[in-house]
Length: 256
Ligand code: ADP
Ligand code: MG
Image (cartoon, rainbow, N blue to C red; front, top):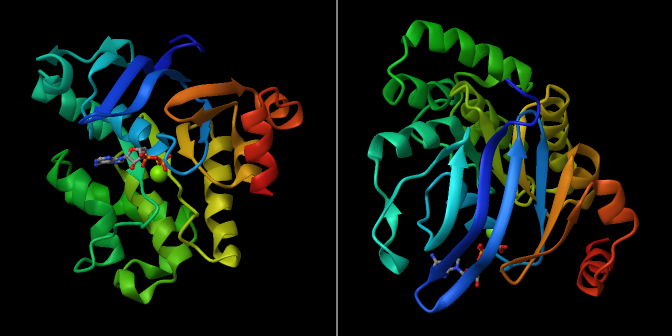
């Protein structure tokens, strides 16, 4: 497998909610083992772009490729939707998402949360999944919380459980939507540390974040979205060190 192989590639994607065009021709590629960060003001389309990647949202124009395989579409314009359910499932189970609000299932223990999708969706052997789940909880530093309920954990611990849950699907890439934004500053760092560990292991990741230090530290490539378009993109040293567009300069000076 070549180093330059894209796990996810988005080409000229257009997405509207009714009359509101939210993505106006966006292209992104996440090569295997690379970390892409998406930054930009609230409302610029970051979450929408992430949700289009794993087909949680439909889009009206442009292509989405997973491991070089193009999503097959049916219909046109606002009626366009993925045509092949098996393909959607394959893509979605290979792109695990971590949300701002953790979204753990409150009525399941931490261990059950981590095991649920591999067992019910992937039909994997529960005994094997339990072993992996415990390893992953250890890896994110909450092995001792396996039998607790989500409400018994701090926000930082819940988010680390959500990351273990995403990893337990053994996905090809991880999608993070502002993973630290709901956390108090002192709890953000424990989640940042886990994300840095994953970057060091060369996991393929797309990270939407408000944390410019995180973006600078872990990314191979940073994309600045403004009003549904890529205003500027590049390696973090360039984007943060010598921003070119006035909008990015303004955004960065407001972010510190
Ligand atoms: P970001 O994540 O960068 O803050 P979003 O992708 O959430 O931005 O939103 C981009 C734009 O799309 C905003 O104007 C938002 O109000 C709009 N939007 C997002 N989700 C929906 C939806 N489900 N229905 C209608 N408009 C939406
Ligand atoms: Mg968002």
